[in-house]
Length: 412
Image (cartoon, rainbow, N blue to C red; front, side, top):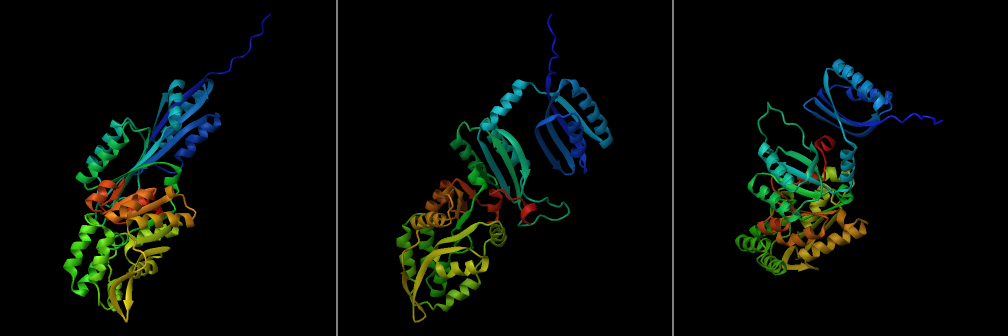
């Protein structure tokens, strides 16, 4: 005689989509029903857009209780005045989804004074053409009131989380950079690795990055050789002449200038938009910061004292009897030296080079931008922007915070 054993109940996978006006207790009430029937939540995601809730739950449950779960959730949804929809999920489809978990993830950040549907559409098309899947989209900047006029310094930023392997990474990067050159937006493409989430050191150029001028040009104006020095400076920043050669030529033209002029210039430096906010957040969250400048130590130290930078490396002007001699002291901080200093500081701070960030605008910044884990060309010269992986041109230096994933709600 054969003994008939009870068969184990069949397993069901059910996708539950909830939408409606957001209010406290919705997620708690629905998850309590699932807990009552010992359902397993395989995936969960929730978003709130202008007080409208969208909640997704993928559950695994026994077929013997699935009907009761759906019935109770429908009653609860009616009580809460929300909509609920159930969709069966095949085990084969779930297995494919699980298989996607090992694929690369990318973060695409879109940033500007104002983002439009056109900007979102252009970036989304690039993502789709690379056969990548958008897992999530979040807004990093605060909401903008309708009853206030547009502010000159307003910011708007959206971050895409994208999964998969680009079919042609170089083409994808090129198309995104093309959008930034044609539209008034900045776009950052970063692989979402552990290093992106754990950046620890940020190194900045000074002139035309932290400050809105080239200090050597300011000194030259006081010395009466402004036009000559500006011409050499521009050619050097465009990469048309060697930085060391240009630096020596420009410093020689400053001979005889009184050192008191340096203090006057320092106290009136035009600080770049966003520096104060950026430095406040970086210091609060434990980042180490450095100024690596082809400019002058005197002005770097002024910024260090004002904003709390940890390191300053720049050039020292020789001064005798209160006058500039037209010579410099020590080794010139050029592009090669900036990259060396970035690596050295990272070593001292026990930071992996992939955890470093470099920000600059000139041709002499390219070596450190290339050496850093994240190199950002800031309001940069065309040659620099063309050779950098990331660029920031539409807003101030606090745009760096969005590239790192900070939200206004966390840093305001």
